[in-house]
Amino acid sequence: MSTAGDALARGAPRPLLARVALPLLERAFQGLEGGTLEATLPDGSVRRFGSGPVVRLDVLDLRLLSRVATHGSVGLGEAYQEGWWRSEDLVRLLELLLANAERGRERHPRLTRLVQARPRSNRQQGLRAARRNIAAHYDLGNELFELMLDPTMTYSCALFEHADESLEEAQLRKLRRVCEKLGLGPGHRVLEIGCGWGSFALVAAGEFGAHVTGLTLSAEQARLARARVAAAGLDDRVRILEEDYRVHDGSYHRVASIEMIEAIGEKQFPVFFAALDRLLVPGGRACVQTILVPDERWPRYRATPDWIERHVFPGCLIPSLAALTSAMSRSSRLTVAGLEEIGPSYAETLRRWRSSFLGRLGEVRRLGYDDRFVRTWDFYLAVCEAGFRTRWLRDAQVVLTR
Image (cartoon, helix red, strand yellow):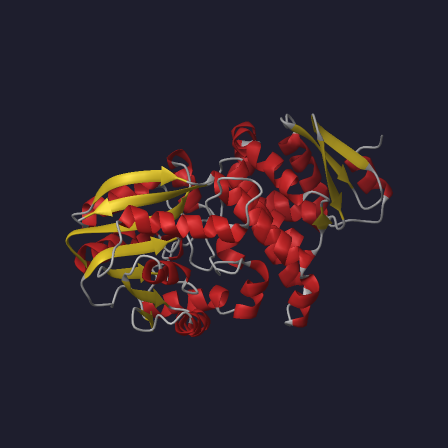
């Protein structure tokens, strides 16, 4: 078997950075555990790293090597967007890489420092920036999300109890679980911060009798949510506002926020909890569902570049539980009354979304989305699924009392 270095030597002249990057990456993959990474180079030569079940990676352009060597995981995603590599089992490949990421950083501190040389900006999100960031993702078009999501149009972690149940059933279970944790009943005034396409509002008003105000910054979401509320005959119990939670005024018995806090940035965490404190009546209750990074990874994650923040969700930052509770204690009178992790269900949720997206690519392309967009969303959904399968990411419903 030829080495990757021999392959480069025999082939056409390659950029200097690629020739320098290849030995770095070979060292980075030494000691891979839990599987064998089998990389096929453009000339057909093969390199293998690790042991165990084989996961294949086809290198289609050697620029992949230099991009990953200098940009790490961000570069890996960007190279996939460019079409420089592919894998027959993208999720398994990303699981293998995530499972070995911490050990790789420990073995190769110099390479880690190079990759982290450009830190995350963690910009302050003003009102205009927040609206712009939300529009960049959620205003891509309701038709696109309808192709990927279940009929409830819920864009957050479902709650599965059985492998053979539908995504719609699992999403309705999650929505009802939030309502139950809030203790919702007829006459309750409920605020939802980040209402999406209205799935929680429809359940809270239609099944539990609550009066719901939903906030979103997405014009597309607001348009469809209002249409769904009208179709359900719930105009008298649900109102949808295009308004930032920071300027909203009101008094509510309950507040729900389902995977919205990840979009606001670290500097807004105290502002978010202060707003909950301000909007809840004495004795009120909130339920915040949020994706989480483990506390031990938070200091590095918050400071380093992130592919999803750059290319899918501008301005996003996934919190750790400690970061949230610290911000809450500094800025509010709220306390944690309960916590349930539901993260294992997110891997299956994402698998269903990705399967729907890839299974309807003809319709996606007819909506005007090009191959680069398809690769971007394929990688986004796959890396998130891998993150939850390896417990790199978590998801929790946190109940707060006033």
